Length: 524
Image 1 (spheres, one colour):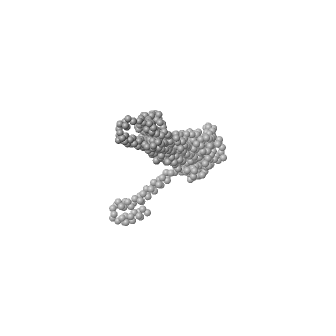
Image 2 (image 1 turned 90 degrees about the vertical axis):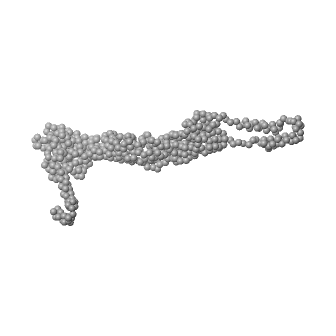
Image 3 (image 1 turned 180 degrees about the horizontal axis):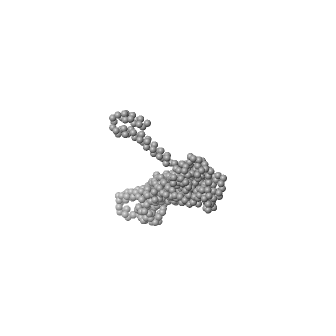
């Protein structure tokens, strides 16, 4: 075929450069090479039993009790006592589960024997392993003691070891059908998540059993979170809880974890060497391990705390006593390392979520005779007009406090504070950081003052002070025109309405006395 097509290719290419002719031949060459490679791979997959490996040979009849060797360096136990022995025959490896020869329990027992003693170079152990294997697969009419007799002087020990091996396989922690892993992500007492992976083995003796912590190690990988050292992958023991931190400072975090435990010495996996000839198949001492993995993901409110802050402005910069005033609250959050960048939320995993409620406590302090000066703390003994509470239940935004009444003249100032204890733990109180305002902030000060009132009027005449003075001036002018000397001789001391007026004037002025211009010292 090749010699037929190559000339045709050359004629089609005509006088084109040699490189094109070489390129045309490449597919054919590749086909030849692949054929050689694949043929070699197929041939190399075959193996041959070379003879006895480890065990005892019966001195009387030459019968072998122990493992058999193959030219690939593997050894194993025969499983068909009624068939001829393996040496000299070609074999190939087969997955034991594909044969359907054994129950899950017997496959688990055989896997356990192969895993623990199949490659033993101790003659007694190898002989006992072969005997235990035949006890499971069939003795073909022989008794265990009769077969153990092939070990000669070691017969009793071999028989005892075989029964011990089978008892161990059927005992706690012995033969197993498989292994599995489960992962949990749970909130710790401090609000941060803990990831833990448990391993369980399906033992023949006890069924699915959780292994003690630290029995094996595996790898846990995080996405959307890190371990406390900042890494996202770590070697961990089964049953070990590790604290994890979200990778984002958003109010809602989503992350996942994946755990893999490989090469676990469990399960019923078998490698069988099988021959096309009618000879014994062999349980190869190539222990098949299992892997177990698990994953989990979460979407939930962040465990990071948040810091509410309030910018406040009084409703009245000036007012009169008796006025009701309020405080306008502009509520937001402060961001910093270790804090959430958004207002905290509560709710079940996956939502819906609602803002964590926060209570703002507001105090109206005063009156002060002088304008308060800004300070970090409230002065000791500062008088308190009232204290009101404002529930911030919709997250950041604008809110207004309940009102307080200004009792008298003077300066007044609002102060605010937030206490986490005002919010129940189940409503997210532990996520709130405390806050308080400074004292004497300019936008929080109100000056209350009584407006100037006209002088009191005379009850008897209805005239006010100004009218009386005008009338007096007119009378004096008349007296001057009528005779100054007579007026001087007849001066009369004030009495009646004039005396009453003087008394009232003194009373009004005394009532206008101001309180001392000193700021009382106090605290909230």
